[in-house]
Length: 117
Length: 110
Image (tube, rainbow over all chains, first blue to last red; front, side):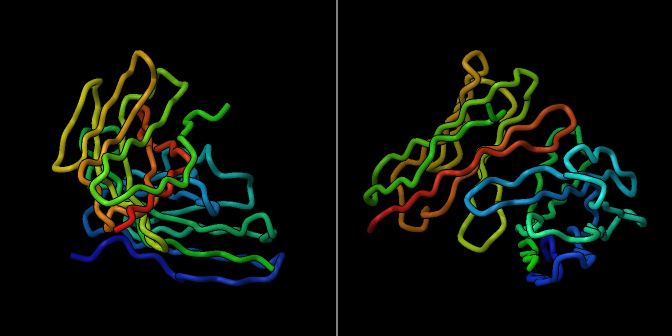
């Protein structure tokens, strides 16, 4: 079956522009996570959802970053007034069961490479 | 100090060698221990997942957790060129957002 998909795969934008990154989780997966991965580093947690409810946004760097998952499926990570330091790979992951349950392995998408000029 | 420290690479071994990859962590509240493999330009994929201290084996891979020392390891036996990738340890607390190590790049030479 289809895995986690993300779009666009690559995004180049100018400083100050807003961007919206989309994540389409595996069908039926309850929990959805957003991570940011710098080159040569592991993913860094940003935020996560159980169904449509945002459970933890402690990893969002500042208030320019926001995320939503209004119908408990597709999620959008929005970065307003982008800055060069926002350039990174943004990864989404989903898990079948609710976060905190056993066997909630996270399956990662291919990521969106964001470059802010 | 980072919450999860991973041995830096890169690591290069001949085919057939036993590979040992290691991470340490600082927060004793961490409960779940995972190893992910990441091929170039791909997302991380889960290799091993364990909750408790001790060893867990899956084919050529063995994950080892020592909670008393806050130390986790991944062993790869009979390493193959197809094992060449970046290996990431990931540790989760009760809420399951994962804290990743920085990754170790492994190359297995034919």
